[in-house]
Image 1 (cartoon, rainbow, N blue to C red):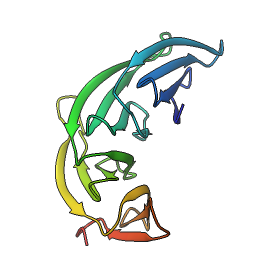
Image 2: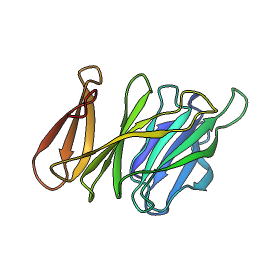
Image 3: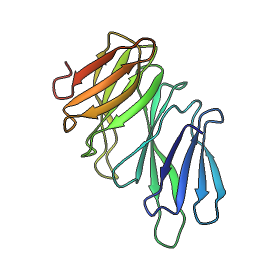
Length: 170
């Protein structure tokens, strides 16, 4: 397991498994795996929307950002379905999203790039790439700061940080 996320009503724990390329759905009341879904070749990270109904998972092997819908109600356990596969720069290893849920940023390790993605705002919309930024080093972890106006990107191979202006891309 490399990442965890609770479902909207917290009855299901979503566990991202990198080596098996799967997502385990664990019943939080029983403490047992209810289902294991194959979702990708080498998932690298997991971020959820504010309401936890949309999951963002970069797949390092397929070079895609996977968007998964999480549906549940008070009586039923969570159901997870693939909504979209969005090609991004090769070897994506992390993802972050703005607080308003409008944008996400995908850091791609070996291509030294950051992909900005406009996220869907309704069930009929799809995600789309806004821009791709070349970075001076191989990115790994990232953190949005200053009310999502700046993105800190940590270098994977050296002790460096890139500071990205999220409005201009500089």
